[in-house]
Each structure stands twice: as structure tokens, then as C-alpha cells.
Image (tube, rainbow, N blue to C red; front, side, top):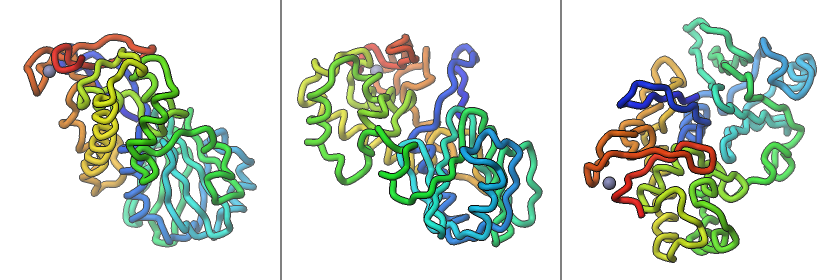
Length: 288
Ligand SMILES: [Zn+2]
């Protein structure tokens, strides 16, 4: 979904899974565009992206209204009027695009829903990703959503809760932030950014962080995710032809994919190294 290049070398460094800001940006736009609409027809070009046979999928959802568009971690859940849900995971490359009634669907979508507005909701590149049909509406009854840690932007995720969760964990802080069972929806981009914000080196042991650092990290997680959502995240796949929101946070990245470029705070070159099997980006002066 997101492929960025190292600005200094022009080299492709990594492909990233979309995280909370990217998925929440999609969710909000879907909410505007498809919530309340009825699914008129369904076209399936890639049956492997589904968890049930195409006939069953089409029969179950055709004529149903999309009641609600929700998000949990990196997944989008479309709740239907027949008490079923469509659980969407984009994984690395997948994305959804709306084609308005006056537009023609271009490209090779995996699945296309035509809505009673005349708009088409087309899902692309669901090679690793999926759309699962589940006979449930409560998150607790959807297996795809089990084993996830708390949502960092939920009211229940308090500083006390974060301190409590951290107190039980060992290991390096950056991989821990990316652990979906620890905290839901954070990946490589925002673990780098929140650690820069809280001035913590990515390889530091969680157990060795001071209480002040832990509290700073908590506030940085909330602040950066909130700001990134407001600005549309760092996704490069546009949601619709008139989408000016998606990807607006990319110029605001402080360390991620800025290897060799000057730190905005101290002008020292941003460095990168492997931490927990992924690229960590950090300022060697600002982060301790
Ligand atoms: Zn710096």
C-alpha cells in the first residue's frame, strides 16, 4: 500500500502495511460515501480473496444495506443490515477506490460492489489481503479481530493502562510497539515517529524506560496518530478522483524514510538500522 524511496539514494527501502492513520482515513471516506447505501450488485474477479464461495458471498450480501463502517486495528468492518459483516484487511498492497456513478472502473479490481447511489466500491490488489463475510456484527464474535491489543486512540487506553501493559513486557521498545497483541494498529512508520517524538532510541529495552519516558511515549502515540489521521496518513493510493486528503501526513514524517537527511530539531543526519528485523529510523542525537 505504501512504497516510499530513500530520499538520499532514491532506493526503494521497504513496503509498509497501512497503519491506524491510513486505515482510519479510508474508513472516514468510506463512511461518507457508502454508509447507508445498498449493495445492488457484486462482481468478483478474485475468489481467493473471499472466505466463502463466490455464489454464497453474492447471494448473502446483494440487496443488503451498509449500516456502519468501523475500524479495528488495521481492518475495516462493513456491517450489513442482515447482521453480517464484511471484514477487510488490505495487508501490504490492497486498497479500495470509489468510482462515482459517472466514472468507469479502471484497472483490475479484485472485487467490485455497485451501490444504489450508482457509485462503485472497488477493491484492488487483494493478493495477500481479503474480504471475509462473517455472520456476526460484534467484534468479539469475529475471529479475524481476536488477539488484538487495545486501540491507542480509544478512551479506555489511559496512561495508567499503558504503564500497566508496559510493566509486563520485556524486549526492545520498537518491536513491542509494532506487536499487535500489545497495541493494535501501529506498524513500522508510526513506531519510528512516536519514538522520535518521545526521544527514545528504538532498540531500548522496554523494561529500562523511565516513568517519564513511558508517559511521554504514551502522549506521543496519541498525538502523532491523531495528527496523522487529520492529515490523511502516508498512503499513496487515492480513495477517489476528488480525494485531496490521502497521503497528507507524508511531508510531516520526522525520521521514517529520512535516512541521511538532517533532523528537523538538531540538523544531525537521520540514521537507520535493523531493529527487530525491520528498519528503524532515528536521530542519534535527539534520541537516547
Ligand atoms: Zn535530532
